[in-house]
Image 1 (spheres, rainbow, N blue to C red):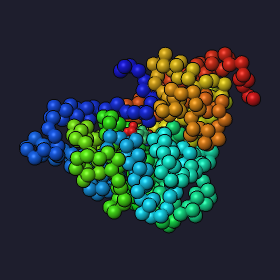
Image 2: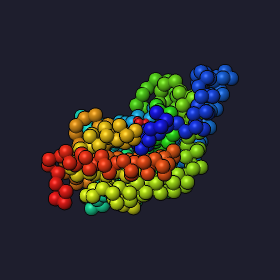
Image 3: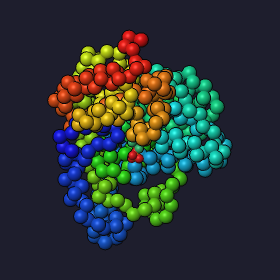
Image 4: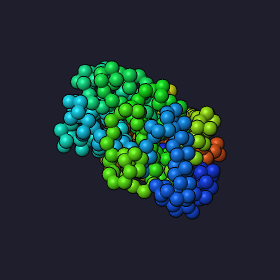
Length: 389
Ligand SMILES: *Cc1c(COP(=O)(O)O)cnc(C)c1O
């Protein structure tokens, strides 16, 4: 496992050494963080420290952070809250985009059965929301707008501050899925002035199964999971105190390392991109050329099939992804690549390389040495492919 080359950091990250050590230490304490005895109070203290650390990463107040089981739950909590809110506000429209994570797409689809309407905004060839289409949709007086900060497949970053201001001008609430942005670019929620934002611990070198939802003071929210009084009654269930504490540690490190992370991954990603462009003819880089996550590189290889490329890379000891982790496993081409205008064939022949803080120059160079041959062989086997056409 250790001598494999992991280039799938957008799917999940390993625990960083510091987080692993801290998490192990915390795992042995089993106290219920709601208990009033000393061990309970100690676990509770860890949770409140973590809340402050997560809040600091995204520049908000600790009491605006709600702990959840992950990005999917945070997203579902916001969308589910709109069922009750639509009655109160007399608005029933939710605006989102065609390139959201499946948990946003599926949760918003479900809202339709509760009488809500959903508009899935198209994006341009780079994955940016089209302003004109957005303005037109806002005229319909939406209840909520939900637009991801950065896309998990192609890495495109939206102008959340501007999109949120426009939504507020139209009297709407604004949510952003910032799972892929946190720890990779500066996320300043106070400046962006959003009402809600979702985060996940396992995308920032912490354990899986824990996440956060930012809820601006006064923004309406309904619990998705009801029961005990944890999280002010907004999220029932005994606290996973060790994982939450580790989330805090991961957030603290992410904030400390934000700049060096960006510089390092950008340099390595550019090295990989330039190397691929120089050694493999006829490839297409997907996503915005500048407004893109520093670690993400999505590439289409006409004449080669994504799953075949992935398996060949697997044999070379390199972990990558075709489309999103959720889209792979099915034979459906990525909805994100279709939305930016790729045909089904090109969308099927695409690979996402996502780098991270343990990626090295040697790993990138190893890939650049052996990967061009893989594409050449696959293209030779493909009767349909004719270079230059
Ligand atoms: C990973 C991811 C999620 C889901 O987060 P989980 O913690 O795995 O539920 C949501 N949105 C985006 C953009 C993601 O990349």
